[in-house]
Length: 287
Image (cartoon, rainbow, N blue to C red; front, side, top):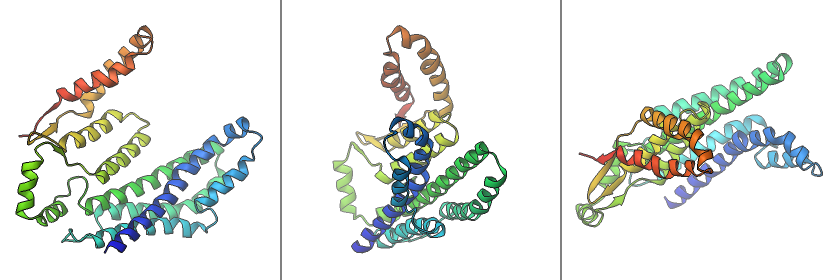
């Protein structure tokens, strides 16, 4: 079981390496290509790009790289679930996983013929816009699959079924010891944070940053709702809409006026003090 767990993590790591490289790093390199060529003109940027492209699988056939990446990620998560003895009711697919997988396959089937048509008939700007759109869709498909498997593993987004399975493996003595010793503790998980961060990042990209107050509230709610002080669990009641008004009025409008007057100190006050006051005002103990 331990070997399966290690193999699963390795497969996921390789899949994410290619996915991030092809969908994030290489596109950023392309956008900065012209500037890099001007700034460091003595370096052969094209050769560097070819090396980076090959590192992220550019030497492989398109279909091998595209479908292989998704197979590695899904296969890795399946091995993690299979090797987890604490999960009694094992499930290897979910609606989120299926949605992400179907979206990814549709994208891969559409991209080659569509881009062939665009190269022959569309303008350079239109080609760039479509390229960005498909990159965002691919990132969305990966995010759906990863979040779906995080839920299946019972370590994210309040998956009650698997969480109950995990808790049932603890003896009554262990639960009593936990209750006595962990009067103040934090029970959020690493993969939960990864999942919310991926989802938040995707939403910020799609909304061009407009959804920042909502994303901030998602992360804050996860952090505070997993915090227990003196045996009492905290509960965050703030909303994205409320924070949006707070940010527009105090963060943006007042910032325009007070930042020059305070020699640039006001943003530090807002994000370190004012925002924390709003956060605390909207936090209470769970009933």
